[in-house]
Length: 200
Image (cartoon, rainbow, N blue to C red; front, side):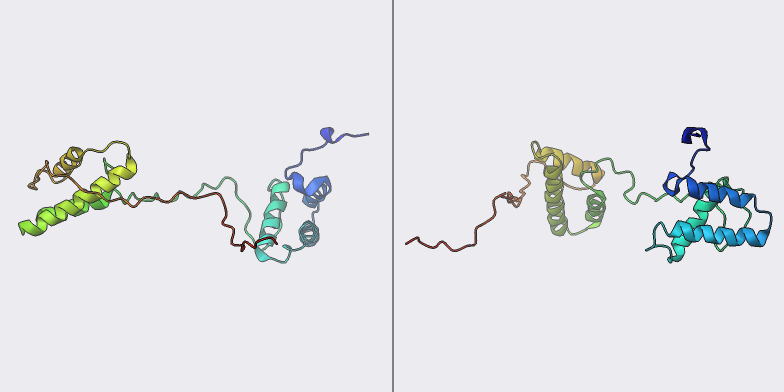
């Protein structure tokens, strides 16, 4: 009695030893026409393992690829799908460029830096002061989202001064008001919409 451990290893175990044996027998057929016919029969048998997919064109190409894999690339037949070339170098995909750039203070975001640059260009002092106050409030909101336990207004003003390259006239003693909407806690109890009827 010959054990499976003494036989050749299965390349794709899902198909079983009988399919592997038939696949390797195709290599020994010398007649091209007969080899192609037998290969097509074997593909139909492999397709019967998943009947709902055997008529799908993409699945047929997958079966052919599996057949060539089981034959270790030694099967010489013609079919619609190209042979799988393991030695072919993989195409290197182009790297996605970073749209954020090198932002040191990422908790503020790139948009804040762009707003500060635009605020520096404003010539009207009243409009510039209003824009700076709005930017400072948004910076404080962003800082609170990142670190809710500790945020100082002086830190916000210092960061704003640094980002503007000291081109803005800032009053660092001004308090930055921030109004945050309190988040509602989710309750784990479902409301009982049934009417309460008094027992008689």
